[in-house]
Image 1 (cartoon, rainbow, N blue to C red):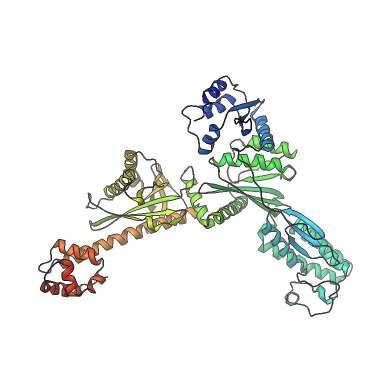
Image 2 (cartoon, helix red, strand yellow; image 1 turned 90 degrees about the horizontal axis):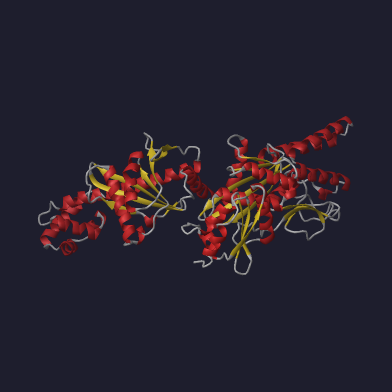
Length: 610
């Protein structure tokens, strides 16, 4: 408990209601947090309120606050600008900070008579460098694609020293290299190829094709048909590369595309940078912040572009809208000294660019946690569709199964981080409701599950799920909701609705059905969960029904009652194991005479099934 809270509350009671910035300080006078506010008094008061429910990070910050300063501004926008500047200056411990510990990559044209194009991690060798690029992958792919399109040599031969010493390699014969080693290409001709390759990298394939088209026409008019044919082939190669590599020609001249993925308390923001109508670079940043995605994205945008003012593009595409887009546009325009547009695409090709950025964020997070990008995306989509505060990492699903009002059971399956957690699966055999009543049976199963949680008497029930899914519709949800209220637990509750062909159709809440058809990853996850819980509950029902049938057959043997039959079934588990037992072994387990055991042996051998 911070003993300074009464003094801080007294100071805050006199605070102005104007916009401004506040600077929280520890006992040493160090700034540990910088924040902005539209109303300073209301915002700062929220930290020191007696009944405040803070996130763990904010609670820790408040615990260390000894005093605070504030700076009044004329508007919330001015407060935002000042906040960005102070965060950069002081790097406070409790602010969301961009930590960039990645190295840079470059494209290098080596300094030699016949330059080679390579991707480099640093500027150690002599040559002309393009970059830097944050993404090593994009740098390597650009070098590979350019070398292929312009048929530049990638071998280790030295030119012109190695002219004619060996035969051309396989790359020459499959038209992947121009064959400089033959000695038939002059330095001037090669330099022209390098010039076009540089232009291709810097300006993109569309501009390269336009320029080479003009050069080809000029060469044809000058009757230089050999050069015209070479340019024709190069134009065809560039166009072919553009067809296979869609990222080369974007629908806009320059833009940054930002998207976010979240998984198990960690967030990843991916930024794809398009320049000159092609994907130029990619950066990713990881966070572990207990804030809303809007708050995280706003902090990221203000800090990232404050550090990259000269690189702010005309267009910035976002996955979701900010709280005050106009204010952030104004901030970016102040940084760039020109008009900047924030856009949240709703449909069309621009949505595909946002999805590409989101896929990258999902894959980066998946690598961190040893999952797949689809699993991360499915959980995030499911959380967003259902309006959950975060993606559900631990999901329980329930299904009732029976056979003509007999063998009434409920199966519970668990999915953790998008995958089945089979050791946590549970089976419920109905004790109170043995008739065909799905609602009553589901209520019994959930009641027993939550009672185990309250009593903490079984490890498998000691944890509450982030989401409960019921095999059924709105009726099942209404039947179970009072049970959750009775136990005082707040768990999101939804039903899984099937169509007439028993396939997943939608998800149902207390307010009606929600379609998941537009969220393919979430839809496939829901289908997998529904199929798995149905399989699990039906398998248990058949197993119990088979045991019940075997028990009935056993009781037909004179001297074998229900208790002795049940004893045999519990001991041998399956009919196959029971058939392997001898009459003497059966006599020992059932506690009967050898004569009765021999009759029992004959009856067991005549039974059919597993």
